[in-house]
Image (tube, rainbow, N blue to C red; front, top):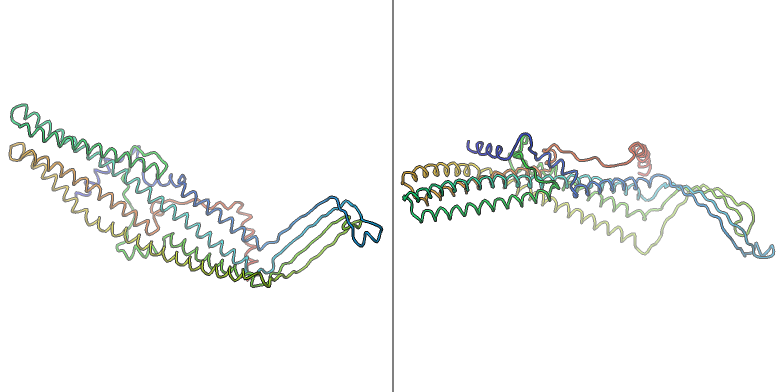
Length: 454
């Protein structure tokens, strides 16, 4: 009962219908400005272009060469005709190269880059999820410090009333000098608490601007999670995390990329076959005046027989990189499990603490009100009254902190499951792939080439 009332007070204290700024709008705006998220997006777009580069290995390459200049020739042909020869040499060459078989290097590289693109996609989500959680924490902290400052001002106001009451009693001859001094001391402490709360709010605003890149809003909406079902047990939360968390998906894709790199490293164990077409247009070549043209269309096989053991070393290197990727994947698995367990424990314990904190506030307020009445008729001392006032202030602060900590823990649980963006109804920009129609056309060609290569 009290919790709903107290939460309603928080809502009324920090939200205004016309000018309020919600957490969802803050995160949505901040995503487009976050340097870390933008870095991840640009890195993803770059990897998509690397996929295109890898697929280019299936397609032919065409080269054009041309040249003209001076040539001096002294060989058996020129000497048979009398002496050396000086001519203006002209060259032209058009070459076409089409890979037929390259030891599965291209297909393995395409698989590697595709795995890297998946990893880059998930890194964007991972970065955005991290930003969303940081922004939520900064927003909630701003909310918390706003409420704590208001409570400090309320506490100061109550101490001012008590001090004025004691002062009037003293002036009428009913109060002792010690009572005034005692009230002055507690009033000074209330002033200090208010200034400390104000400083903490300024720090929260500075942190909010650092995280979001936005100025702290004048009005806030209490960021209570709605339409979100927190799992009923740690096991359910863990299962969701293992299925959805982008960090695990990044590690899995990196392992697949390492395996593809290992397969690509074995390309030199096989011969390479290319189909090559060359057309030349030469003039005054090698001391012989006149046109010299030819056309060749050849299947060429190239096979390196020995290169100092570099190929074997490269394969062993990639084997170690696979094991490294697997180790990172295992470490990521542990970290995700630890994160979701810590988040769940915080959420569970805080949820169990809240009813007791609520009761503490309610009891403290009732005691304060009773002591105020008893003080007015001389049944309670000033010290008793001041102590109960501080007890109310302290209990309200404890409950405010617990409510906001529990809210943070909810966001942490959802983030630990990898679904915070979905919870906030946020989407990320699509990758910049350039000319989509050209990509679709090339994709069909690549699929045919992959079937041939395999």
